[in-house]
Length: 141
Image (cartoon, rainbow, N blue to C red; front, side):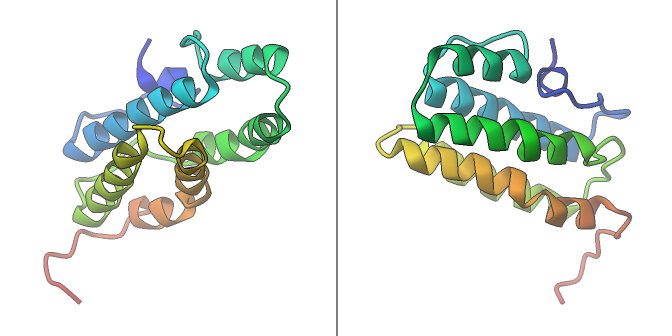
């Protein structure tokens, strides 16, 4: 199963640098979710959430999972990343998110990992603005 299927997203129509960057960061976010929630990887994110809700009763995790299922994942699934052009802004934003999360993957502060996941999903509007047809202007304004 591809990473986009795991998150319940539509597959991309063309493999571009932007698509590969998005897949790379989604793969890292899947790893972060699995490790943060301390469960084996499930068939998809919905199975992961259901599994954790059955076994983990920590209130902070339950609240996080509720938010993830009700708000975070719908934002991800509603974002149209199917035809992302290779835009510098988009790739740079993805690279920053990936860098920040990679630096938290030692899990010295697990809440920071959860915060990275929430921030990424909450900020999807800024990605959709960039992917919504803006051109990749080569000049620096």
